[in-house]
Image (tube, rainbow, N blue to C red; front, side):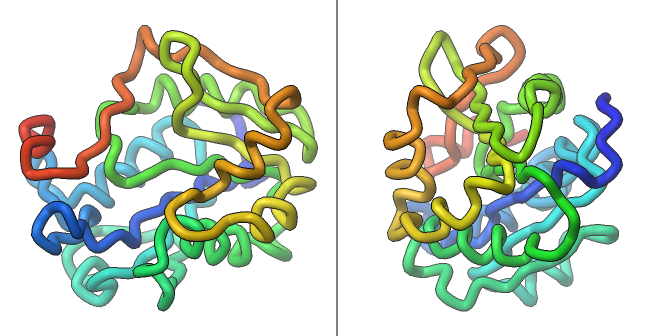
Length: 199
């Protein structure tokens, strides 16, 4: 959808173990006949990300075996059980030296967010100082785009399950919100009740 040519890398966080799903890794949940991680990569590709880094953790070998992640850079996060912060750090670290000027971060467990929302966030990127977030009825959500000038600061503050929350709170005034509520639904697949969203 957008002409990106590797300047903005898609960074898919797909390492979680699905603790509240009885230990079923979210990356391996089935959606439209394929693993959820494969669906999420397809969304990033369709939106215009030609460089995609996928952070794997829980049952990473099985994810590699069952999902078609060809063309992606697969990043192992041995500390995945510490929470999303460790995956974000691993993912941003993997982008060092690639020439990417920004990372568009998406989560594997949000299949209601499709290429239209991702493309809107990509289109709002200006330079390495950009901070862009999808919003749903004015409330900040995913995906989020981090210009490379912010990566070191995010990596310093990303701990536990908070991800980039502390950094974004500190830089709230710099964030450009892009309304996506008309084209996407930001629900998470966290519990067995949420599986109703998968097809």
